[in-house]
Length: 340
Length: 291
Image (cartoon, each protein chain N blue to C red):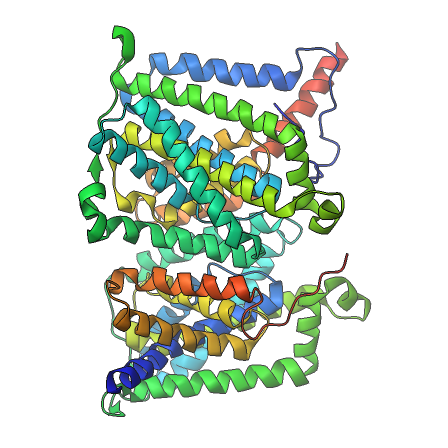
């Protein structure tokens, strides 16, 4: 688990120090989580595997939001739009041009990177609430655009687009759901490692410097415009890949799946996972997939209210999200270990 | 030309709705320096409360005053109970809190009053004016908005409490040093914003009808109006609200291919275009940052 990305957050006394042994607690915890993610789906029903796949995919989207908001300090309420572009790009490539899905996924990422990079330019002039509103506009504008009659031949209009679910290759004897799950998990892992390296690199430090103090960063020689637009591009690109995976997992792309509510859900996932803490993305994704279901189970008529109460409970008890819980546990384990 | 004038006039009529809401948005922004995403739902709940009082036989203005006073109290109560403890949390966490509040209020209102559309009375009647472009209710609504604006102007510029509130919002530390009770100023801001939201909701409800999701679009346009006019300026926000109403109508009429579906995205795109050139809004103060 990388801890380099949380320079400004002061979670008193719980910041893990760099350990001397190679097998640090965070590393063991990450490997254990990964192990669980690999093994557990073998024993689950297909529907639960599907849900886990959605969690992994949302985790990618939340992680990319974390790169943008957590590292470079730009707020986005519009990531549902990039997710939608990724999903539609994949659907259209696969169904209209017969592009194999393994090629369509990275191309969708590149398309979203370019769009995000370009959107980063007007975003340069906007800060705080103004940027939130501009990205919000993006989220609101996306579904009607995909519904437009002009593009109906490509997008399927209101009805959406059916996407072929990929078959497992090499005659592997696993269900389609499990195959898509492991595919998503592999891609998520690659993106996670790329992001950790990015944030630990010179560019990552430049982004965090921008977040903490723009004026200081620019006087240190950081090219504000370049890094902020790049952050937007990278974040949008990863979200696009998540959208592509979402399209092949659900096997269906529809404009109303990517409304503003989805952007809000991603935002909530980021806050609940802990802003700027990459491993928290997985916890945040699990929250936005499972908690609405739990809330519905508690009360059908008041499911939204129960969901809201859950959010308040989390932000009251853990204002820094899952990250705070993880650091607390880490401190406890360290105490325990040092006793022996 | 007649089409143009008509479209502008009916744009002003819808703009009055947005201007009302934009005022409430600016009010909370002056108090807490954030946008409250649950503002629309709070206004919706107040409007339902007023409707309920009328169902119980209280006359219009009685229900109006009662709802506004109760909303004021409820705004303060929400701040004390839910957002004061989050005062030190980051902005992002507070936004999550607003979203949670939104979900709770919307869901509870749906449970109490269900999701069927209800008509709402107006004290101004609905006789058509100016050849049917604008109704007397809409004219009344514009008058109420301007009255409210005048009240806020006097309150923020000339009263002790109003000045203290502005000080508390812009420079909490310095305000504390000169003896302003910053905590209570924030609570007061929530109360006033809730009260203005109640007035806005009661004025808007006869036009768009009463139901738990009535405020979704209106709040969005209210944000846009407030941001366009400048979040630090109540007069700017009202002007922004009217501008958005007119722009939206003109875009729907004159740009080919823009039906009702694309009205909102177009309005938002125009606003982003304005913001890129004038990031503090048309009438807002230019923010100076200290290094």
